[in-house]
Amino acid sequence: MATDNPVYTPWFVNNHPANGKGYEAAVTYAVAAKLGFKSSQVKWVYEPFNNSYAPGPKKFDFDINEVSYTPQRAQEVTFSSSYYADRQALVVLKNGPLVKNHSPAALKTYLYGDQIGTTSLAYIISQISPTQRPKPYNNLNDVKSALDTHQIQAFVTDTPTAQFIAADQVPGSTVVGQFPSTGEHFGMLFQKGDKLVGCVNWALAALTQAGTIQALQRRYLQIYLTIPTIKP
Amino acid sequence: MTWLGRHGPRRSKADVPREEAAQFLVPGGPLAGSIGGAPQASGFGPLGRRSRLLSSGRRGVAISTTSTVVFVGAVVAIFLLAPGSAAVRHSFLSPEHMWQAFLGNPSKGYYSVGAAIWLNIRMFLAAEVIILILGLVVAVVRQSVGPVLFPLRIVSTIYVDVFRGVPLLLVVYVLGFGVPALSLGFLSKQSAAVYGVTALVLSYSAYVSEVYRAGLNSVHQSQVAAARSLGLSQWNSLRFVILPQAIRNIVPALLNDFISLQKDTALVGVLGAIEASEAAQIYASTTFNYSSFVVAAALFLILTIPLARFTDHLILRDRNRRLAGSK
Image (cartoon, rainbow over the protein chains, first blue to last red):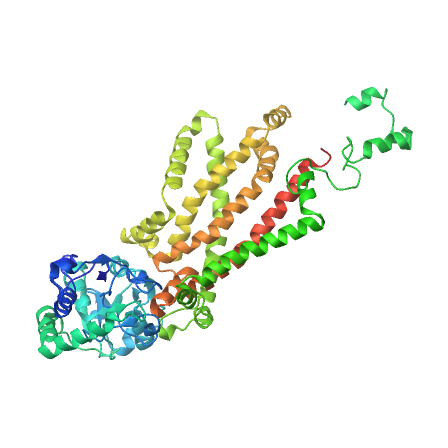
């Protein structure tokens, strides 16, 4: 299994995927158990997001790293079926203008930044359409630093990550709200044409039917889902 | 000169019989190349006898053609016959992806690589002007001998050591994230490109100052002595005698550093400035295809190769000027 470094709550806990805590870690171990593997047989490797879609044989079976499915990406890699339907949320500075003023018209006037290549950045550009071009950063860490040092006024990411960053990572920030769903979902990333995805999809379907996926979402993600909805 | 001594007192050229003069004009003779004709550099190099023998003639052409075909053919064969070749060709050399990356489409989340190279051009032009000046100042300070300038000399030495030793990427990060975090008012509110250019200037001036120092040292001591004996002050002798010669010697090295600078503007992308390689990275992360990097690389080559050929031309011209008339 591959994932990035550092990884955040609620997807993993303490940047240590092997402890099995956190939603994505728990889903991985549940899928592995369904396929007949023991926990000790699950090995984790580090794969930065920007490397995960490189062509050629991979050093992992699948990569689980909040990767959103898009049809264009599906031409380059193979995705599993959805293990979480995510929504985008807006993280802003606590004493900034965005806290009070986040009508759709006002949202266009602010300076955003985001991680490159993410559906979050595409969401800002296509749905919010700000007048100032959003600033791109190579990873989420740099985006957080940028918000912290007031180089940007807001950024967008999936709701659970947004809530964790606002609560724990960037003291002066808060989540103003989450945007309506665009039908986006996360999938595990496989090498193009990998046959293993069929087995994993079977395991995910079985877990969903047994209610395990919903139970894990309630356990790790519920407290992050009670956030008001705002329009882009 | 000995040949004048051998033939007695000096005579004007008009007095020298035609046959006698002719022996000095044969190729390889003392006056060869100085009156019309091409300079004859000896031995190796682009004009040397040895390379002329090998590169001219039908045999030479046949050999070079064959070796080129074999070499290029081997590389292309390895690339095409490798098991993963189709996947790599789709991932790196896909024409429609290259075209999409070149044009850009912000509504899908990625920007135009072709437009982004303009930021690189502006950055390296701005940086190069400041680097040439700052490098010269640091080099002149380091070469000074007066005791009054001692603290400046120490500071310059430390500056050169630090900024040649620290990787440019780290300097870019420290300046680009550190200075805004200090909340210093005007200094902390600049765009990412400004911090990037500052990092490039600091790092490259250290290298370029060493190139200038090499140039200053390459000017013969007799020039300095002659300038001083003519009554020029230290500053005037530097300005009118030393520097013109020094800079003429090191122009190829400075152009070499300029070409390197053009490539290193790519590092500013980590700060969020949308330059060519960052635009390529954005495209790659959005579509999971790396063809945008090939587009960015091609654009960089279009910038750097003409300058490289111009540098070669300058080196050749300088060599001809210096070696004209010698064997």
